[in-house]
Amino acid sequence: MAQFDVYENLNPKTNKEIPFLLDIQNDLLKNLATRVVVPLVVNMQPAKILNPKFSVKGMQITMSTAELAGVSLRHLGPCICSLEHKRDEIIAAVDFMITGF
Image 1 (cartoon, rainbow, N blue to C red):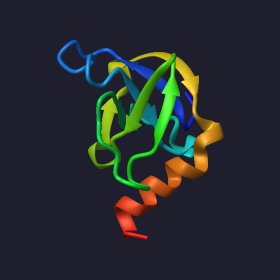
Image 2 (cartoon, rainbow, N blue to C red; image 1 turned 60 degrees about the vertical axis):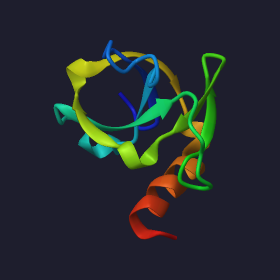
Image 3 (cartoon, rainbow, N blue to C red; image 1 turned 90 degrees about the horizontal axis):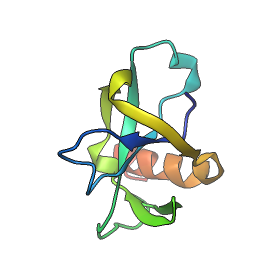
């Protein structure tokens, strides 16, 4: 598991609208039994800075930053890809949510 990895959402109640979960937890905390994730959703109107858009498995998805949560490792599906190359956008969205800048 690594920061900015994208995992399948295994929850059958939510995985149609939220197909993926983005791990934003720092790798220094990799030994915890939970990960801090942000839902990657389809069909969302993005807010500038707060909700960057990405392409994952050919799908256009939006980072729903305000819905970040801690989840147990057992609730994460397989790792699909990494969004490490989008690090600046991801950090900017989380920073904007917390600090407003």
